[in-house]
Image (cartoon, rainbow, N blue to C red; front, side, top):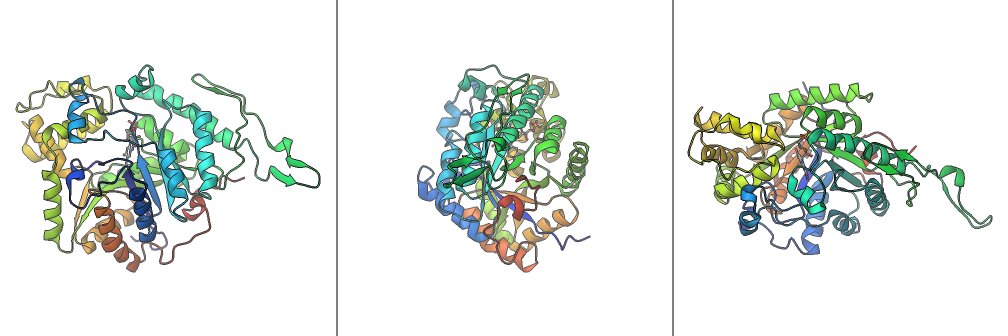
Length: 448
Ligand SMILES: Cc1cc2nc3c(=O)[nH]c(=O)nc-3n(C[C@H](O)[C@H](O)[C@H](O)COP(=O)(O)O)c2cc1C
């Protein structure tokens, strides 16, 4: 089975921060320490744009990790995701220094207000000439609620609020009809009042009157990205998302997720391929397989077990600090997880697969650091083969590439893997400019 008529979509999964999922990577010699300087981000965006990436997207979290031991100290000391710059300011900078690549920011529907978020993304869509992507998240943990001084909503409620949030933002983006601005100097008419309307939305969680103070944007709506893994999360993605991130750990799992997401998207009344599916993978590439393996071993050595637990605790909203490191993991612990239980279950499963049924927390953490981020390790040919295998077997429509070190691993990808994929006809030979990201990726037209 081959998908010769399709191109793979590539999103670079970056952070406005020191480190991404590859913990300790800020210590790596090919990590640029300039994460607080504009050049760091401008150079990265240009490298990815030049190298053929479709989207540069930044993750976000609205609190320092504090779930482990109820303190931010272990995270601050190790530099574990304690820095997160505001992404709208960052995208504004990058819009002026790039002209083709899509630019994505994560924004939470749990803590923001829809009018504010609609306005920010509409403004960025104008300023980037139609290249903006919103990664819609519902946020994960109690520390974020603490920072905003609100109660922590449970997952389903967060998604119910998110549905209302999207109903409002999309209506606000449409509150100016295409062509409403007339700028007619002869008649003195700026815009057609009949083409600019209130939305008068009154929901269970949120209200907004409208209209928005930003006229219709080049893409109509920004490209909407979502990464829900639970049933409710996938349902939300089926209704709204243009791009979906997944975390499949094998080609078979990716195929299953792909088929399941397509079914849910169809149930939501959209074409089944309306949401393009991109598993998040880390590619560790070397000129030889041995070089790639050594690189991977080096990354694994950069982070200690406590840092791994700080990271897991943040994602799962669960404090591991009172669980003995060297006793077999007790499944009763799962019942205490109020965040993303699936993440912990996956790590326990991986720990048991690697170290047996009696795997301890230390073993689980070790297995996590060996496999974190679903790694494709090898030569450019081997990595390109695996990417093709996932794509051709309908496990995905492209990939969210997670870096180990930044910019080193992105440079490896653009220098070594992209040319190989281009030779194989998997990414376009000539990069199209002058059209919106939405139309270049073949996503639903939202301009009408
Ligand atoms: C590739 C990827 C990127 C994500 N980025 C973020 C992020 O930047 N901020 C965030 O709060 N959550 C992020 N998430 C978490 C998701 O939004 C989602 O909450 C998670 O996958 C669990 O799914 P669920 O919400 O359906 O339980 C990400 C997930 C994935 C797979």
